[in-house]
Length: 442
Image (cartoon, rainbow, N blue to C red; front, side):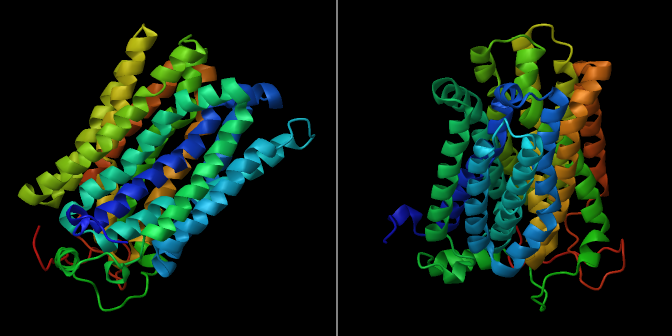
């Protein structure tokens, strides 16, 4: 296959474009259950708290598999790992629709299927971070990660009107079968398009390959992945993980409960909820690449402490303010807009987390980002189950105010992060490595 001239030195952006599509489909797969949640509750005779267990089962499987998924991507490369993951999650997405509601063990079976779906989807973002670490010079990693995480907002944003329409037309089971087919198709295209390194890609030009290599951090001679002790004991990884845990807690309120909140608490009908339920995810899709662009520009002009840490701190702090203000709006539509602003501000910070783990992780970027994302997803599992408990005891306003407070805490955690410190394999716990050097300063 011959590429058009304008794409011949932009193969890396083709790969990121398809990673955006995979990211969108992955989030469509996971958000569809929150859109169909009310119908599933009726069929399975579940309470909100039991439905929260179903949400948490997915996130728990997803969280516990993050670090192993990242290490697998480091060892076997993102091409095969993402393809196998796509097949896995397509199977378990379809199986969600085949769980018989009348069975005496239906809830347990539903929990098991959702847990295993989470295991399969866990490879997506650590593997994508490994791709970015190999294919992108440091000065472009903000926008590359921003595009990938714009897929989160795109997939989750498409979900409310699409899944609502499918549910109304054919029943909730069909929304899972459609998502499964999309996942299989995305995995097949990924295998065709992608190679693990630029040197192996048949479309790469010498010009693009040289440009990529010139902007990569200097690698340590050893190619073996970092030992887990060096990753878990690194203070920058610990601070990133704590901050990303706060990020995850807040994000999962939107992924798990926002649509149900609009219907049950704010009193919007299903049609209005489908459209207003899109707003946070549209904001995420805009905020993620915007944060990447801002972060890259600031990094080029003022360094990584300003470009990566500063962008993340401001985004998280703004998210806390918007989420708190959204609880005070009496009108449901105005509340939706303000809360959507919080979701968009939150995702201004998304690319900073993944760009920093690419830089400090090097050949172990998948493992490092997997550890960080494990914290994010464990917090998300907590959100799925704890949010309805807080709401039942103290009201939904309290649930959102807890999230706002965590945004501020996550913002402050970035004060402890130095994105110029690469993780060394022989460090003692908590010790920082020397600053990373670049062949071509960004």
